[in-house]
Length: 359
Image (cartoon, rainbow, N blue to C red):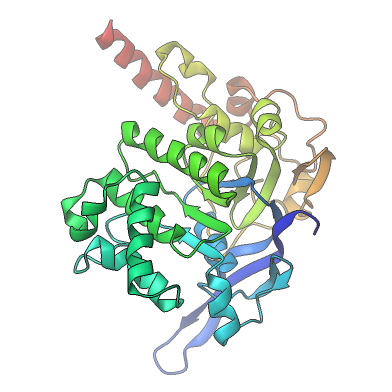
């Protein structure tokens, strides 16, 4: 684990599903996270991306021990925290913090900002009243706010300012790992850039490590050093940002990258859409979970689950046919999936009409 601040091995979270009023018979389990493994190096940003419901946020909360894992291990700074509890876990929480997605829901509306930032300092016994007051002023300045903002309530701020307060609260106890759970998805596009640049600046100044969860791949490309792509509770591809964006190895990763919006109506024919709906984590398909929507699936994919194997330096993929996949084009997707062809035609028609109106 040399150089790794976080190491996750075979992490899983299964939620039991019960039926009945009295006996509550166990009828299955939702596999929210199903055998996730990765490392996060010191000073690095690892992004988790994927569709809604794929297990990104659940993974983040498992790493922080906000929820208990069903299986697997989490090593933080060389210590296994999955069996830790009580006072040792409380002391460790100083080193692991989170920035939530909704900056308004994550702040207590009845507390002034100064009290919000003072609370973690008080809980961890960090200084007397004067020292904590000085620290609050320092934190506000660190995220681009003024000292007098400490006397205001969360509803008196804009969304971007509230997220800055959330970042300041996460940094209050001097953590080394910060989990960013879609920290800019609830903000205006113009404000997103400011918050992302603030996070990058704080990382350089304070030596932070980020586990960064996002839907927006443009933000990920700007923010991350490495990217892990999740699908239905599993990591299907992980690698350095530049390599993953330039040469994606998994069909699902290619679909995600091709779906990035581009301000050019003439590019409609290049958008690849997978066929079918996202399978239920209560009853995932056998073999490769993506085979029901994949344009390149074979009989082997339907029965044998692929392992996450390294193909290049630091670039690993979970696909039986990663070496032999051709360039993923709309023509190939449409030929392999009639449902995808219909959705592509509908999408192209909408884009064409929009272009005609704009012209």
